[in-house]
Image 1 (cartoon, helix red, strand yellow):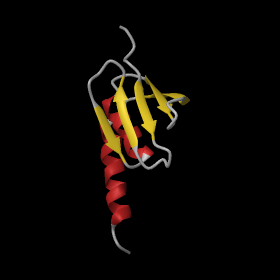
Image 2 (tube, one colour):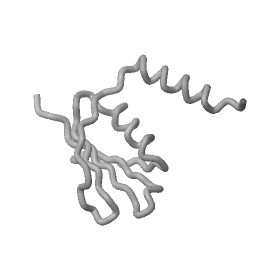
Image 3 (spheres, one colour):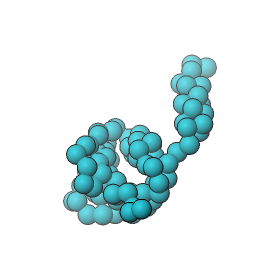
Image 4 (spheres, one colour):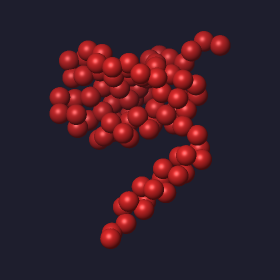
Length: 88
């Protein structure tokens, strides 16, 4: 089985816009935080997959691997975010 094509994450000068795509694929998604973009990569990964992070000059600044995030943990993550958003 050949490895999955690498995810590509590009950020702007101010780290306020992140665009996630995948080599050889025809899609790109924009996010306002690195965490949201990374979570989307986790959700799309079907096996450990390279994630190449580019800066605003289109230079690779980091290469890591993303693994699929288990569905049970996705539900837990959502639950904790909802609790954190509740007013005190």
